[in-house]
Amino acid sequence: MAKKTTYATGKRKSAVAKVWVKSGSGKIVVNGMDLNTWLGGHEAIKLKVVQPLLVTKQESLMDITAKTFGGGYSAQAEALRHGISRALASIDKDFRAVLKPEGLLTRDSRVVERKKYGRRKARRSPQFSKR
Image (cartoon, rainbow, N blue to C red; front, side):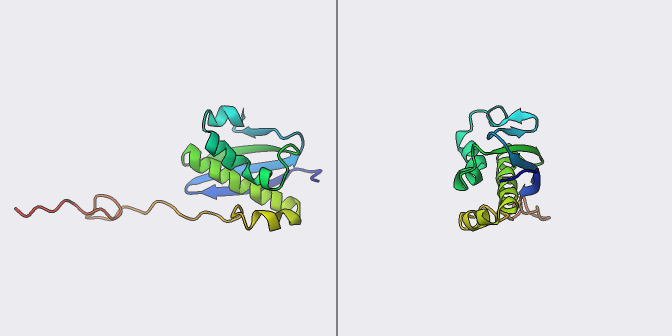
């Protein structure tokens, strides 16, 4: 498959993941830690991160190194998933046909709505007082 390192960027909310993918033994290193250390006991979020590898059947063939920043750990994990998907799609064009229907190449553009003046939050108005 990939003889050289492939780079891709993944994003979600305000989180950004810089991802480098190369052929190897299936090792995932995020921010200098392995995946289990980085996410602790969050098994569902770990499955989200490795989903692109499982869909393309590359979980034991690719080494992944990533740097994440911004947002929380859940948004960082989804940004990492997006970055891994984009890197795999650039490695092999056949992977794109598998990843696209799963929605893994689509950048989730939902972000927090800004707070408006005269409101308590983005849409929540102050409590009404009759007297």
